Image 1 (tube, rainbow, N blue to C red):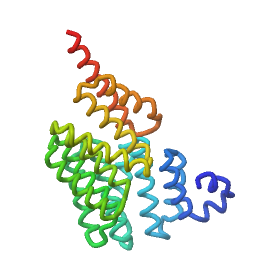
Image 2 (tube, rainbow, N blue to C red):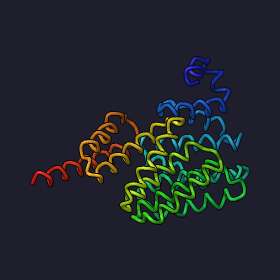
Image 3 (tube, rainbow, N blue to C red):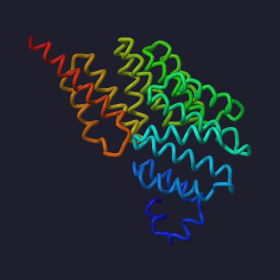
Image 4 (tube, one colour):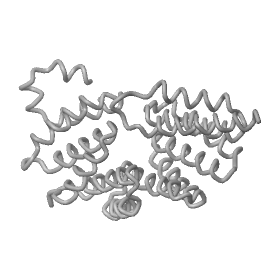
Length: 274
C-alpha cells in the first residue's frame, strides 16, 4: 500500500488526505516511521479547519510516529497541544485516543502522575463507546504504570482486565500485549512457571500479529525469565537478538532493556566464577 501511494502523482495524493492518513498507518506497521510521519503531517495540514475528525486522526498519527522514533519530548508537546485545542465537534472516542497516547508518552518520560491522569481521562471520555484501541491503550498503560511503580500484584490484576477486554473484542494484538504483561508480572513475583506459560500464550498468538515492538518486548521478557531460571547463555541470546534487530531512529526502550539485561547477565556470570 505504501508503494502504491508513493507512485501516485503528488497532486492526486495531496488531494486525498484520508488516503495519506491510512497510508501512514500502513507504514507504521512495517516500521517506516519517517514516511508515516511525512504523510501524517500532510494529512494534518490538509484537514486543519476543514475536517475535524481527520484532524484528530492525523494529529494522533503524528504523535504516534514521533513516539515510535524516540522523539518523546516533541511527541509530548504535540499531544498536549492537541488535547488543549481539539475541535468541539470531534467525536469523544477520538478525543479519548489523544489522551490515551499522551498517557503512554508521559509514562515513557517518567511523568507517572500525568500519565495516570491522562489514562483516566481517556477511559472517562470513551466510557460510552468502549472502543477497542482507546480502551486497550488506556488499560494497558494503567497496567504498565503499576509495573513501573514496582507493584506487580496490582499489575497482574490490571493485565487480566486487558486480557478480558482483548478476548471480548477478539483482538490478537491486545491479547499478546496482555499475556506479555502477565509474564512480566509473574516474573516480578517470582512465579516462573506461570510466567513461562504466559510467554507461551503470547508467542503462540503473536504469530498472527507480527508487530516489531511487541516482538522485541517478548524477547526482553524471555531474556529476563531465562536469567531468573539461571540460564545465563539463553538470556544473553534473547537480549542480543533485541540489539541485532533494533533500528536507528526508533524508540530505544527495547535496546535499553537489552543492555541492562546483558549487564545483569555479566554480573551474575562473574559471581558464579568467584
